[in-house]
Image 1 (cartoon, rainbow, N blue to C red):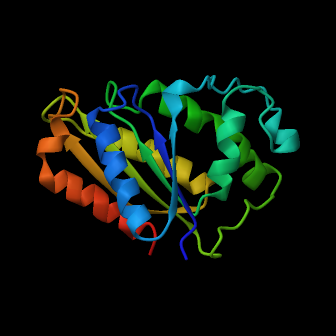
Image 2 (cartoon, rainbow, N blue to C red):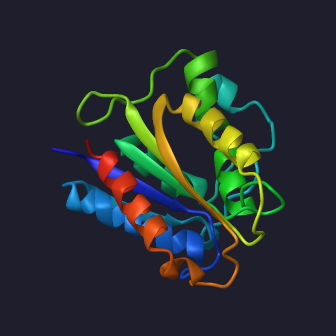
Length: 192
């Protein structure tokens, strides 16, 4: 039975386009039998990494803030969906700060040689990325590269993405049946 699928919402607009697609992906995962949880990154105070090196000694981040409330769920998850709109061709500040703070997991794996906790089914973690942009023709490649680098630290297998440009008005993605279905199918794939 699939374990936890964790949705990380990197948009400040709760009913924005990226959030709507994340909801569809989590619905697909739930229909696939997974437990789902959603974290609104913009509701937490997560400071950027300060490059203090503390995690190189312990594998834990020494900066105390909202990051510590997310980390246990991230490590428990069998699958992760990161959803972020593009901001100047990159991830939102909330999503990027969270990813940068996962430096402690990088240190745990590559400096301290401590494995991350296994998934509930013993398989590699699975992951997906969802992103929207207001500009009609925009490259998502920079954001995808960041997400894939982060997922290597989690030892997660990248199963795919849902990317849509040219949807600026909040909720406009609701009129794109193809995007909604693609997000749902991606969520189901995370449980397989």
